[in-house]
Image (cartoon, rainbow, N blue to C red; front, side, top):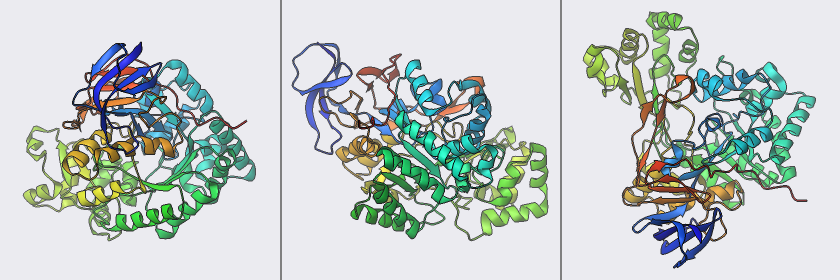
Length: 561
C-alpha cells in the first residue's frame, strides 16, 4: 500500500520536459511510481486541475538562527519550497565559540537586520562546529529540508577573534581555518560563502571579517573544496566589473567547483549595468565554467525608519549617524550643516549607489501621529512639495516629529519588468535571493517561487511553466549537488509542491509578533498552493501547516572511499 497517492495531476517533473497527466504514488518518503496507479493508499489527494512538481529549493536564505525554533521555515514552506539553504553572505551560526553567542549576534543583527534579543533568547547556541549544529537539527526534528554552508566571516571571527576585522590572517590562522572548513565539509556543509557588499557591517559598526580579508585568503580556503571535490563557492556582494566577473569563471574552472558569483539586478541608479553583467556571466558558461549570477524575481522592498535604517549604509554621513545613540542622532539630524552633507550624499552626489536617490520612490508606510495619517501612501517628493520643503528637510522633519518612528518603504532594484524578464530567462542566472529569515521586520521575500509561477509565468509569459519549475528545483539541486532532490521521478525524495497554476500567487506580507522575546516579523502566505509534501509527509494540507516533521538535514555527498 502506498503512503500517499496524488491522483490526476499535471506532472511537471523538474526536467523541463512538457507536463503530462498522471498519478504520483509515494511510499517510504520516496516517489514509488508515476502513471496510472491502481494501488490503494493511506491518503489520497485529488489533484485534478492542479500541478504536481518537485518541491522548490531556495538557495539563498538566512534561516540559520530561525530554524532552531521554527522547524518549518515559515513562511517559505507555504510557497511550495521544501528545501532551504543557509550560511550565505559569509554568515553562519557555526563555527561559534562556546559561551560567546555575541560573536554571531554581532554579525547577523546588523547585516541581516535581526533583533539581537531574538537571537540571544531564541537560539540555543548548543554547538561549536558545523557538524554539531547539523546534528542538533537532525535530533530536534525539521519540517522542511535544511542545508547550510560555512560563512567566511564566521570562520574568520572564530579563529582570529577581534583581529578578524583588523588584519590579514597569519599562515597559522589560515591553516586553522582550512582544517575547520575541511571538517565542516566532511560533516555535511554544502560549501563556503562570502560577501563583498560594502554595506555589510557588524552591530558595532565594524566591517564583517570577510570584507577586509585579502581575496587570496578566501581563495586559499576554497582550495579545500577542490581537494575534497565537494561544495559550492559563493563569492558575492557589491558591484563587480567585467574583469572581476570573468575571473570568477576562471576560478570555477580552476577549482573544478561550482561558483555563485555576482548579484545581478536592475537598479534605477545604473539602469543598463545588468545587461553588461549578464553578457559577462553568459560568456563564462560558454567557456565551460560552472559559474552563475544570482537574482530574484521581485522588487526589493525595504521598510525602515530612522531608528533602524540600513537603506543609507552606502553613504558615510548617513551610516555614521545611524550608529549614534538616539538622542545624539536626533540632534545631528537637526543640524543645518549636517543636513547639507546628508542632502549631498542622498540627492546630489553623482556616484551610483544601490539607493536610487529618487525620493519619488520613497513612500510613507506608517505615521504614528494622527495629524500625519494623511501622509501614508504618499512619496517624500510629494510631501516635500505639499510642505514647501526640500526633500531631505521634509524627510528629516517628519521623522523628528515622530521621534524617528515614522516608517517608510522604498524599492531600489528590479523595478524594470523587461529587464527582470530577460535576466530570469537566462541559463546563466540562478533563481533565489529570497533572504528568507533575514530582515524580518523590513522585508519578506518568502514568496519568490509563487511570484515566479504566478506573475512571471502566468501573467507576463516570461518563460514556460516547465522552465520555471526546472529553475526552482532541478537546477538548484544540480548546483549544490543534492542527491535525490529536484526531480519528480521514481526513486527520488518525495518533496512535492501541488499548486494551481491559474491562481498561485504570494499574499501581501503582514506583521506578527511571534518570535522569541516578543520579536516582530513579517510573514507572507500564498494562495493556490494547497499541498506541500516533505519527504512524503503532508506538511501543508489544504493550505494549512500540519505538525509533520518530515524534513531532513541536507548534507554534501560523502567522501569517496
